[in-house]
Length: 349
Ligand code: NAD
Ligand code: IPM
Ligand code: MN
Image 1 (cartoon, rainbow, N blue to C red):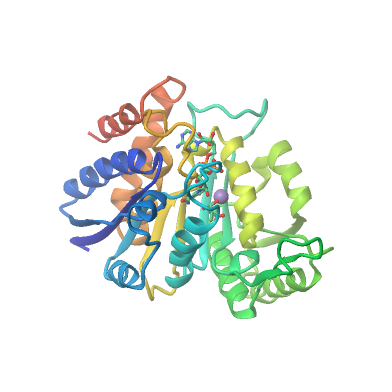
Image 2: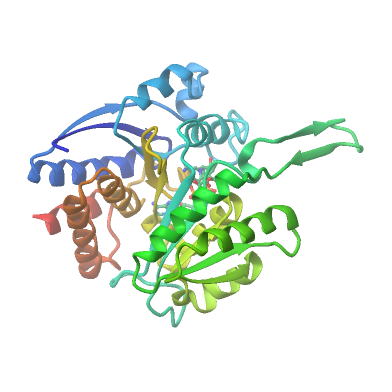
């Protein structure tokens, strides 16, 4: 493409700080490739809700649909902020966007880059991708409260898993594994306890796996997966897992690869019936917001994922190479958010 329409959602906390750096990098690589970028900024998140009383309206969703992709910072208030009830922004903005735009794959790569430091003493060569389910599972909003406020209260979030949803997720994961060097896929679930959803995942991995004889398949219960993510993360290649397990595993993966500020995510509508959304794995980090202390690398790498998704593999690869070059040279220095962005820009030049 020679022209892109990108929706920018900076959001709350450190979101605007990291998106500003991602934007600089986006402008640089697209400019060099002769691609024009039309950017529209959308005010969404906790502050927007406090200001307007609006979360994500259907009108805004329609406007978002008119873009090629969405570059997202983070939304959400500080967990202790009593003005914003927990869950409103998360469910009615972020999850509403993922569900409405059918982002059924939440793609979360993890690599240990030279120049960054894992807290593990012997991390090995970490390079895996978590293919997290994005629109189902315990996140589906299928639950409620009975006899609220009494000792007889019953609160449920019923995990919802469909054969259609799991099959298309698993197929995406196999297609990805098939083009990676090690061609290995690990299903992570908990089918010893969550027998219904777990067996559905296991059955569909077996069924779809038959189409991919070159891919080696194994299985771990999620609790055991956390052991290996900390004792031997280099063993993993592609992990396919449900929405909640994938959420937890990818924060852990961020931590073992040198910090959550380095981990990007793509919320992908692989059928391309609506724009995909690219964001850091991390949240709005209210504890460091407004201080230029956030690492923008996750947002910058999410921008690379976005360009790759949009068919601009060259500019995407340039961003990745520039990030790696910058981290190798300065990864362990204490720098401001803008200094890291400028470092990546300098590596691009
Ligand atoms: P968080 O990811 O915002 O922060 C966890 C810890 O990681 C904090 O100590 C933070 O300072 C640090 N951190 C995060 N990003 C960093 C970066 N780029 N550089 C350096 N350090 C970084 O998680 P939380 O504190 O649980 O959540 C804060 C808010 O963000 C909540 O409202 C939550 O719901 C929301 N949230 C939003 C998203 C999203 O928009 N995709 C994701 C996760 C959490
Ligand atoms: C993430 C976040 C979200 C999730 C929340 C904020 C809804 O933690 O993107 O990882 O759980 O998916
Ligand atoms: Mn998360």
